[in-house]
View (spheres, rainbow over the protein chains, first blue to last red):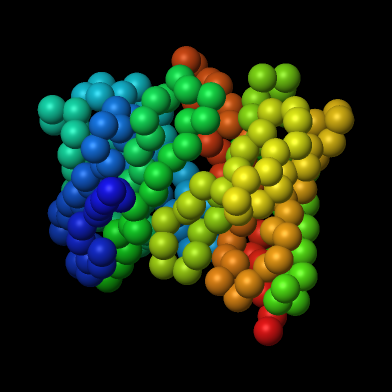
Length: 116
Length: 112
C-alpha cells in the first residue's frame, strides 16, 4: 500500500514569491493534517481536515497561508507571498479515523522549503 | 505548549536496550501517550501508544507509571537503524478535536 505522497520534495524560491505543496493521503483516510517543522523542533499543526472540512485551522497564518482539500482526498497548501521565516519542512499526514482510539497518523516525507 | 518533557539526547550501544524517558505530569485521565520517531529526512513514524497499562508491540515496549505522570519507551535490542529523534506526545482533546502536540524530542544515537 502506498504511503502519504508529497510533492515536491524540495523547493527553493525567492522571498515574496508564491509556493504550493501537494499531498495525496493514504486511500480511505478521511483525516488530513498539515504540519510545519522548523530545524531542531517537533512538527507543529497548521491545519486539520475531516473529509473536505477544515476543522482546526487555528494555527494557520491566514494572511499568507491557505489550504484546500477538494473532494476530500488530495490537499494543497499555499504560501503567498513567502517570507524568509517560512523556510522549513512542511509535513502532510493522514489518519483513518479521527475519533478512534488509535488515531495513528501516517506522515509523508515532507517538502523542504528554502526561501532566499 | 508541549505537554511532555524529554532529555534532548541519549546514546545507546548497539544490541543493548534503549530506555527513553518522558515526563507528562499534567496529563489528564483520558489522554493517551503516543511515541513516534523521526529518522533523518523522513516524516515521523508511529511506534506505540498507551493509556494506563504497559504496552508491547513488535517495535517497542511502553511502560507508564501508575500515576501516569511519566513513561518510558524501551527498544529491547537497539540497532544502528534505530538512530532517530523520538517524540513522546500526549494526545489532547481540544475544541472537539484530537491534537498531537510535539515537543523537541530525544535524539537517540545508537553506537556500534
